Amino acid sequence: MAREREREREDRDNTFVDKLVHINRVAKVVKGGRRFGFAALVVVGDQKGRVGFGHGKAREVPEAIRKATEAAKRALIRVPLREGRTLHHDVHGHHGAGKVILRAAPAGTGIIAGGPMRAVFETLGMQDVVAKSFGSSNPYNMVRATFDALKNQDSPRLVAARRSLKVSQLQSRRRVDDAEATD
Image (cartoon, rainbow, N blue to C red):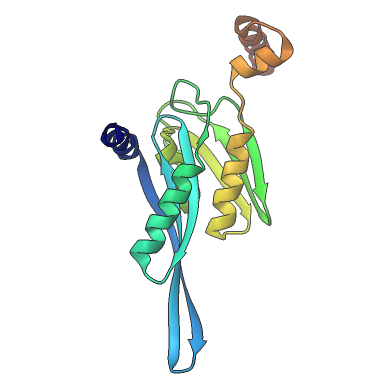
């Protein structure tokens, strides 16, 4: 019984892709020299719409990465994707001095984003997005700002439920608005 649960947990863990975003080395000066420690920032996702990030600290790099990966797996969020490849709508996010703008993109655009944001989109499974970061270029702030933006992403199904409409009514309004904008 316990072995089956452990095997299921391993199978679930094997479906995740993790990317190391940043490693920071810090030194503590003590009598007799310096003691080095490492902090790792890792992004984990299943490439099907779930993604999370984690931060881990340890004396050795592999241990810091392992701790960060475990923290990321515990903090997964689900992001609704349009056609499994891009965002439903443009969205802003911020954390501290870091600000990001994420824009939906047509098929074939690819991931146009800076380093830490690119890692988030690749592990999320997003294929087409245009992103721009402003303010802080600190990887921690950029990743947290990106997650803030992704948490504000709504699918048409959620919006329709909130407005007590059918998804088809919502989509038809969108097409009418798009046609008026091009005229």
